[in-house]
Amino acid sequence: MELYIIGSGKMATSIIEGVRKDFAVTVVARNEEVLKKMEKKYKIKTIKLNSFNIHGKNVLLAVKPYALKNVSSNLMGKANMLLSVLAGTSIQTLKSYIKASHYVRVMPNLAATYKKSMTTVTGDEAYKDIALQICKSFGDILWVDSEKELNIATAVAGSGPAFLALVAEALSDGAVKEGLKREDANTLVKGLFEGFVPLLKENHPALLKDAVMSPGGTTAAGYSALEEKGVRDGFIKAITKAYERTLK
Image (tube, rainbow, N blue to C red; front, top):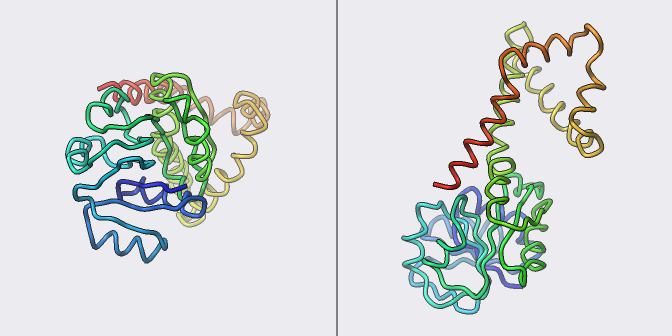
């Protein structure tokens, strides 16, 4: 199936890495120099965004939300399916800028580069299977029944990598503070995150915590410090704030 990806930023390139082996990908963007580099690197077709005719095409829109108005002014015709990765941009808003027969909102994250994105999808049920097929090519998928649920998912899986990066950096900083070399601290944190994924897939987070925390032990001491500083509440509020931002 042919898939036209509009955009050339980080999210667009992450998606391209995942889908290019399973779909006939054409990238549409403004910068001709960037397009030439992408064409050479990914062995895909490219088209400069300049009165681009989307009629009957399956289009994946991967630009910044603020660029929607400007980009849409360069599109002609009516797409078959429009998949949008624009955070906080409703289907109703998309309809006011871009014509399509079917609309689907998609929220991946940068792990799409490694086919490890946790992608949430919602929209036209008639194109659910096709949308999920596309998104499955760059990671795990979750279909939700409403845009509200997708906006909440955006706060978790979309913004989540930044929140987890903060955790990773803080753990490394703590080890360095106590005397561990930075390189060794970073190696430990990377190994920790890699090993945590299979554990989380098989166990509830609360059970993992209980399994590690011995009475009066090192984990209990550290966990107490986290609770004292309100880390749990901080993360809950971070999700709330990120979700609220999708509504503005």
